[in-house]
Length: 302
Image (cartoon, rainbow, N blue to C red; front, side):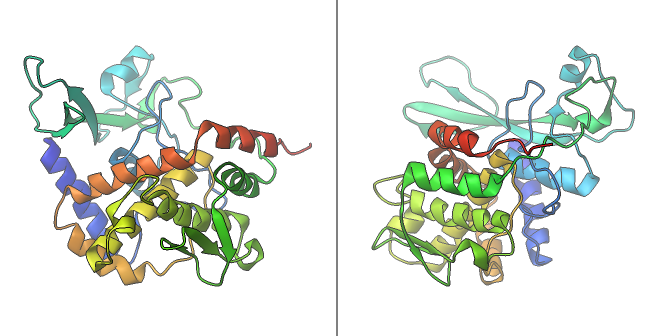
C-alpha cells in the first residue's frame, strides 16, 4: 500500500467515526482498562499517526497486546503469524540528505536541509502470533499504583508551572498565557481531570515563546481553531497513552466535528496534526515530569 493510500484509508476511518459522533482517539477504552501506546517488537513506542491507526485497529478487533511487529520480526522472536491473519499498514518516516544519491519512492517534505520521506509497511499484533513469550503475549494487568492521575497532574504542574486559574470552563487564554479548569472535585474522576488538564496544556504549549503553533499565535479563524483543537485532542490522548491513564475530557467536541470533517478533505491533515500533537506531548512530558511522577506514584500496599 502506498503512503497516499494509507493516509486516505486512515482519514476515511476517522471521518466515519466522527460522523457517528465518536472521537476515534478515545474510543475503545473505559476507566478500568489499561492504556498503552502501541509498541514495536523491541518495546519502542510508535508515534504520531501510527498511534491513532493502531489504537483504532486494536479497538475494532479486540486486541489486548500493545506489541506490533512485521512477519519477519515475529519469526525472529520464535513466533508464527496465525494463518489468515490480516495485517495492518503503518507509516515509517526516514530522512535523506539532499546531497545523498538515491531517494525513497514516496516524496517527502524539506526539514532543516533534509527531506523527510515516508513509506507504508505491514505489521501484526502479538495477539495474531503464536509462539511468542512474555511480554508480547497478553499479560496480567500491571501492579496498581496509588494516585497515578493526581500524581501525573502534580508532576506536570510542578515542572511547567503554568499560570493557572480555577474556572467553570476549561480553556487556555493566549492573551494572558493562562490555563483554566475547574477543581478536581468537579470532575467524575481524577483521570478525567488529568485528561482535561493535558488538553489545555497542549494549547498552552502552542504559545509563541514555546512551540509557536498557528492556531494559538495567529488571529482567530474557524478552521484554524478547529485544527488547533484537533492537535490538542490528539496530544491529550497521546499523553494519556504515555502515562497509561484513561480519562475523558470536558469538552464540546460536537461543535468541532463538522469543521474536522471539512479539514480532513485533505488526507495529509491528520498526519500533520498527529505530528504536532507529538511535539506538544514531547514538550510536556519531559524526563523531569516522569521523575516527579515516579516520586508520587508508589505501589499500593498489599
